[in-house]
Image 1 (tube, rainbow, N blue to C red):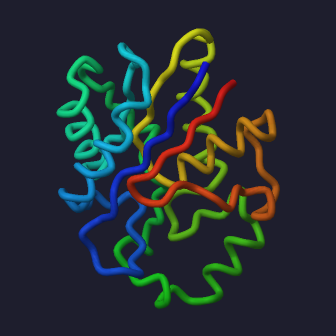
Image 2 (cartoon, rainbow, N blue to C red; image 1 turned 45 degrees about the horizontal axis):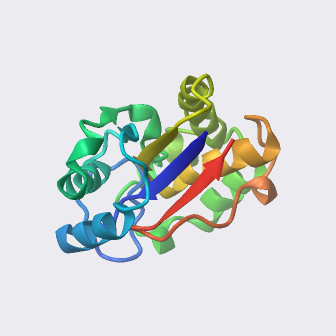
Length: 184
């Protein structure tokens, strides 16, 4: 099976803000441009799953405009970006260094911002992946976020859902509007 991981386009917020689970819009023109670039890749009839957040749903709408035969997308909130709690919509450079230090000291279980840990993100992404694994002969598109894409990369590369420290977390994810694919 091939899983296409399409990231939403750049958001319409000032640079440097933490916006994980915040439901903020993406730039409409950049969304259409990214959808046009991605549209030729998935085979006809490829199912599409989408995060419950607006910026990902904007990408699906633009993709459907390019490829109407892909049909309606399945909304799955397990594909939402990580929830950074109290740090949502705050400037990253305003987050105290001690908050980052606490997270790095217990990367798996510390709830950065008080809401969700990296391990919790991995569990929900793994649950969504588990629904794909019986269908080994098809492609699927997930329209999602950088954190979810990194979680998928970690799960596929490590063969498991657990993480010990930040050194295990994938460093690379597609830029906004970009994509990658994994076969498993």
